[in-house]
Length: 128
Image (tube, rainbow, N blue to C red; front, side):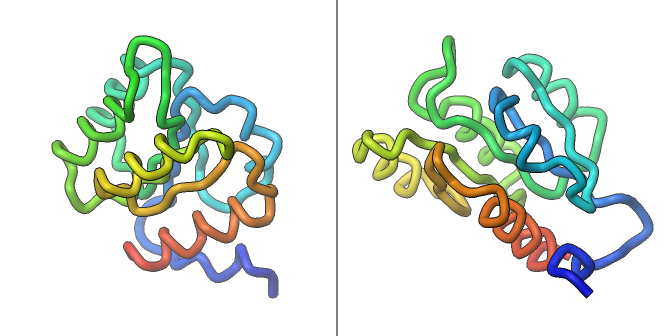
């Protein structure tokens, strides 16, 4: 039994929302939870209104929404939702800001696919 088989089952599919990080699509291909991609913040907010999501993964800096704006809005609307901020590994200021704002986890752009899947599995199990 592989790591991904340990995701807790419940009455609905576990769902991960990935915001403005389409480059993570290949890394999450075949992940046992449903993965939804939003290509902009407005689409992400619509998804969050309509669908129960277990974890959100988003870039900390997004055009039109700098300084973690979208993640901070989501944190304030749904305080218990696990949030993962993706930061540039060369930008220590963004990493510090993301951690200080209460993100559940902060990862770098260069995270390996298996590490990302492991982190998501851990957060889904912890929330379940």
